[in-house]
Image (cartoon, rainbow, N blue to C red; front, top):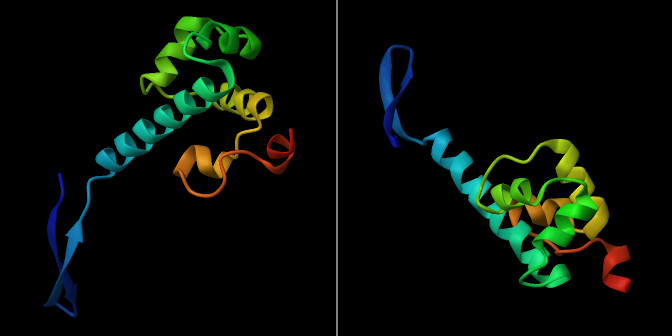
Length: 107
């Protein structure tokens, strides 16, 4: 839970710092990632393209649906997704930068 902590130097309280909850940071990262996975899937495969994408990734569709719902995605599946779609890994993880790598943008 976020809060405020004391900054102590030489036994004296010299200020305060805001504490953050790493768990809520992780949840926000996972939510953003799942939204961006869905966004790319919709752009490249359409509203009903989840099963097609899952087949191309060689994973069960149910697993793909879990990823779009916020489940953790193993590195192997994430790397396959990046290779298959041409998605920019920085954009996928942070939402910053271009959505697709240069090669994908030229297609």
